[in-house]
Image (cartoon, rainbow, N blue to C red; front, side, top):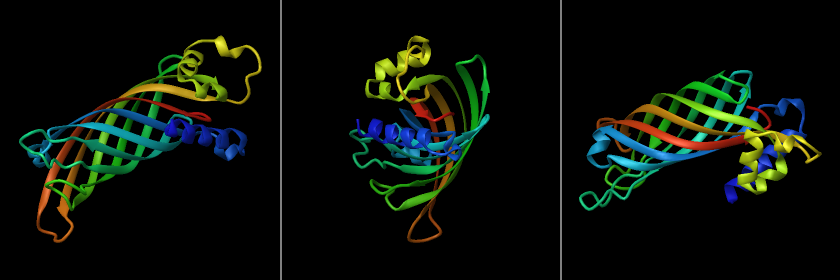
Length: 209
């Protein structure tokens, strides 16, 4: 509910502001991550969660985001690392129909490990990804009840009558690959490589995207 409240506030600011706010959106997604290379020795898979704030102009969008990969490590690695990542996505979308789009994206990011065996490691990363989304216009009031928001997005039920300010909402699926080179904070010699393959589902809403 906290995330829905933040997102609703962002949308209202975007919809009642000046034209410069057009294209502002909030996104949230969750799914799974599988790791390869050095990090896989301590954590082969994790639950992935990410939130982002972006701006879209025509088919191009830029999104700043923050994410977490959480795993208990199992019985053999009780202190598995739980990386925190943050960065920027550059996305290009192509419409398939009026409501459906596919997109490709490139990412620059950073991973930090604050707990577990690799605590103190951190480094930059590069990534690519693809996805698809279905979107539509909905009244702001429907954000208080997500099932109604989804119905309004994929149908014409909410197009009748005056239900207040409207915005864009989308449901999407995403898959991506990121490579990180991690270094120890206390020296420049130790390093570890990490490859992360992530797949997730999510939602986004804002003034237009």
